[in-house]
Length: 441
Image: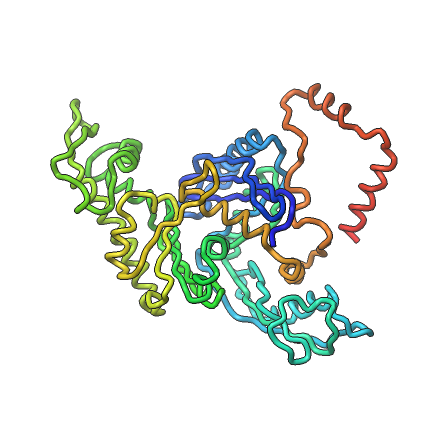
């Protein structure tokens, strides 16, 4: 169940950086701020220029702050599935408490025991997801705290990723003046958030078609079983149009958005439009069918690469079919083309949040939703990975935002401070000290 409070998601994509501020009231997500800035310093989903990426993050964050009327301090940031590895893990400990009642520390200790493994020096553990616990042989327990037992076992999944990618993302967020509240594996957040319980259980494929890369994920038995990343996306479709029609990249992007279709049989060779061609004074007429054939060629190549990876694990036999999302999936005809290639049911996922009904926002909304749904047990297991103490009485993102308005004028900020200063200052100060004492105890 989602916790009350505010959560901020950050999606660092190849073509754009998205920020969403969401407030949860009675487990209902209400989006109160959105930022969307053109990406710089990112190539095929990988950060190649930290300074340019930092500037793009700051622009997106500023937009979200202005719309939400808050100051963002920390974010849940998405991590791409590049070279992501998923492995089952298991740990067992003896309960140390004299009363034999299982406490928070026991959950941390059994999570630490589950992580006793050799990790290559170029990789690091990204996340540890507890699946179930066993207390004295009794299985299927989701949260063992408060139970009586002598032996505690944990079964879960451990995710590892390249240190370089994780470090660069964290570095960019910190240089942008923010702290990382959660590092969320985007493909995991995506499959958890957009699929129904039945689709997660019986098995479904999710294909996220971004600007610089396409990520294929398989969810089965309510677990992320497989990910595959192809370093091609919607930006490559635009490049193909630009090269074939000998027009600028910006013109090609406009043609794709205004006239593009991924299924040539749905278009007409008699309908044409003008194209500004480099080296020619007058525009050249191009028909819809020709443009659709250019788009189809690249998307077919992307889908066939995904199909090869899925055929190796026989994932296309899963009853859930394929769910498409991401900015490149919003082109007309993409679903029809995907059905022809994959030979299974294909549907397009579009977020239903007001003002964000575009697949380009699916990832960042999923990051926010996933972060808000994380359980206390997850945070205890996470503390075993990071070595940090966790106060479960506080929200996982207690400092995500400040509700004070963002002021450019120093005097206005001072006026706000004077107006909102509590009359009983000593009492409030005492409460604040107690709050931080509980966190850092």
